[in-house]
Figure (cartoon, rainbow over the protein chains, first blue to last red):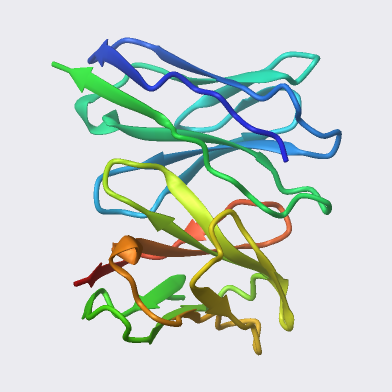
Length: 111
Length: 111
C-alpha cells in the first residue's frame, strides 16, 4: 500500500493560490491519486483525481510529475470557505481497493 | 437519490454493550468502507467491501465485524464496546473509479 506524506498545516490569505504537495514514493503502476476536502463535523468530499500529468476541474488542479512519486493540489484564489483539512489518497486499482487516508493538511485561510 | 445514509447520528453506549451502525447507499456502488475518525485526527479504515459477499479488513479491524449481504447495505457491528471506540464513524461508497461518497457520520460515545 502506498503511504502518503503531506505537510501538517498551511496558512494562506484570501485570493492567493495554494499548493499542497503530497509525497507517495511507493505508488503502484495502476494506482490513482485522489484528493479530498473535509470540513469539521462532516465526511470528506471528493475534490479531484488523476493518474498522470495535469487534471483540472472547476475547483482545483492536480499536477503529477512523470515519476508519479508526488502530486500537488492547486487551489486558485482561495477564500475563507476553503479552510479545511485536505487529504491525499493513493490507490483504487484492482489490487489496492484498501484506500488509506493519511494525516491530511490543515489549511487555514485568513482574511 | 439519497446517496449514503447512516443511522443513528448519535449513540451513547456503556462499556461491554454491542450495537450495529447502519450504512446504506442507493447509487449501486460496489465498493463500500467504514472509517473512524478520532478528535483532531485523520480517518482510519476499519473494514471494506468490494461487492456483496466480499469483505476485508482495513487498518483497525479489531472489535468490529461487518457483512455485506446486499449491494446497498454495509452494517458495522461493535461486538463489546470499549471507551477506546469513542469516535465518529463514517461510511463511504464508490464505483470502480474510486471517487468515494461519504455519509454524514455517526458520533459514538462509550462510557
